[in-house]
Each structure stands twice: as C-alpha cells, then as structure tokens.
Image (cartoon, rainbow, N blue to C red; front, side):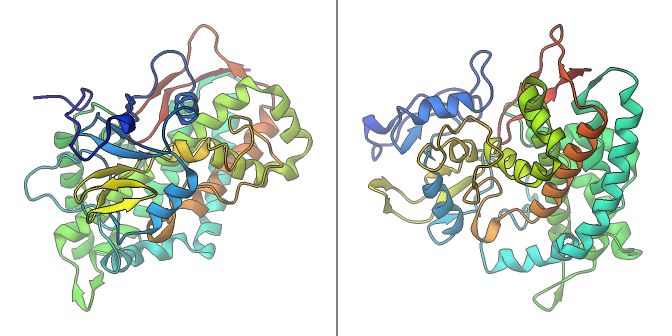
Length: 401
C-alpha cells in the first residue's frame, strides 16, 4: 500500500497536463524558507493542478480562487475532514464545527463565539501583555533563547489554557498530541485518541460541575433545543485544543525568524511603533501557513477544470500569501502594503474565530519584545528547523542578542 508521501494513481478525469509533482504537506526539499517553493511553483504551474500525493487531490494556487472555495460550502464541503487524510479511531467524534457545513456548523460555532468578542479579547489582552513582559524580562539577561520552547509555546498557549481552565502543566502532555494532528507523517490515530480521552474526562467533569470556562460552556450547551451529547462536546473541545495549542505559536516563529534576519525591518518598528498594527497585517499575509482540505460535493467545472464528486481539494493558504496577482513582490515584507484581501484565516463561514485574539497576541509580541530586545539574530551554530504538514511551522528557532 502506498504511503501518504508516495504518489497515488491519477484519476481518469484529470488531464496529464494538470498533474504536477508537488507535495504541499512536504514542500521543503533543501534549505528553502517555507513559502519559497509555493512561489516558485506558482510561477510555472497551472492555476489549478492535481497533486498525486496524500491520496491525490486538487490544489488551488490563486488567492481569489481560494477565497471563493473557502466561502462556497455548497460546492466544497468540510464534512469529509479538514485535512487530506483524516485518520480517526472507530466511532470517533467529528471535530465540530470545522468538519461540518452550515447551517449545522454555525450552531456549533456559536458555542465558543462569546470567548472571541471584543470585550473578552480585551481582557485576555491584558493577561497576554503581562505574561509577555514577564517572559521577555526573564530571558533578556541570558542573551539567547530557543524562541519556540521559551516563548511561543508559553504566551499564546498559557492564555488559551486559562480560557479552557486546564492545568498549565498539562501543556507538555498536550503539545505533542496536538502537533501530531498538523505535522506530516506523525502518528495521528493514536494521538487523536489520546486527545479525545483527555478532553472527554474534562467534558464529563465540567458537565457535572460547570465553571465559567469554555469547556464548561460547551459541556452544558444546547444544540437546537436539546442538550449537547458528550461526543459532540468532546469533538468541539478537542478542536479548540488543537487550534489553541499550535497556530499562533507557529506564526510567531515565522515572524521572529524574519526579524532576526532583517535589521532594517526591526529598526523600522522600533523607531516607528505606530507601524506595528499594519506590520501584524503584513506578517499575517506573508506567513499564511495552513493547508486545510475540502471535498467536492458533485461533478462540476471550476474555472475551466473538471472536478468529480468526492475529489479532495487543498486550500493551501501559502499559495494565497505569495500570489503576485494580488501582491507585488509577494515574498517582500512591506509595512505600508494594503493586504486586506488575504486568506490567512480562511474566508466565509469557516473564517477562524480566533483571528482577533491572534492579531492582539502578535501585536503584543512585537511591542514588548522590540522594546526590550531590539537587536537579535539567528544562532549561526544552531540552525532553525521546520515542521510541515497541515501547518508549516518552526519546531526549533534559536535566537541570540
């Protein structure tokens, strides 16, 4: 049997000229930065092509095509899983709402929407700033750090653990389990089973003795006038764990690697801190890192390409980040660029609910780090390491100052 990293047979309805030898879950072949292979391919590949990897699937390379597919759940369903090859134990719960379509998806999304409104985000921002200052002040005198372990896996994750009222020490157990869901070739079935078991224990406890945290609200919620089932609550809560433990930390790694190599941009933000909000938007555009999947609902033509019911489609946001039709010189960071059209957080009904909190945490990182450690570099003796898959992120990023 072919593994996910091996080529799979190309279906008869896929023309040979639309088949491209590219594995979006494993794009790095040498020492490239994560987004460079996406731009290189975008300059020579068809706008829509077929990849024979990971079971075989379509890839959309235009940002406007990505936005269209994200929003069109009538043609591109989320019900077959948010990754190309979702692996689950028998009778496992769905990861609602990301694995549902409207209108049911919207019902489940409302279960945690209140945690991401402006007033709630403001309160979390005060916690995040205090924590960022504490972490940076603790690192400053060392003259070095491994940014992922020493900062990125603390700031956003500690804030998230407080939102769900889970013990902070559980972070070390949960991180590898959550990371396995978004890293290519990681053991997914056994790790998701452990996540379901962990979440299930807490869902049962909160259902019996609810508090004011997110898991309690989910465990005691109603769905269309009936009590939520334990399996549904476990699915929603597990999805929150996977998202809360990875995405913002991953984005922080890309930003800090860039700033470590670009003293001009560091100086620009230090001297003009008013640029930081627009810098956050440009970083979000440039370092889009998720590769979610959809399923084709029925036979159709999509921008001249014949797709069949059941085909898988990868909505690879790194392609949207470097689309030269939307962004001149797309690999360049320009803090004056207008990048409101980005698809970093998706689009349509599945747009990321945590986008406001992510923006705030990234803004706090830049404000507090550059105030205290304005000059830093990569460690030449200890190069960064990337991990790729559903997300492209750093697992190791040593910094010196």
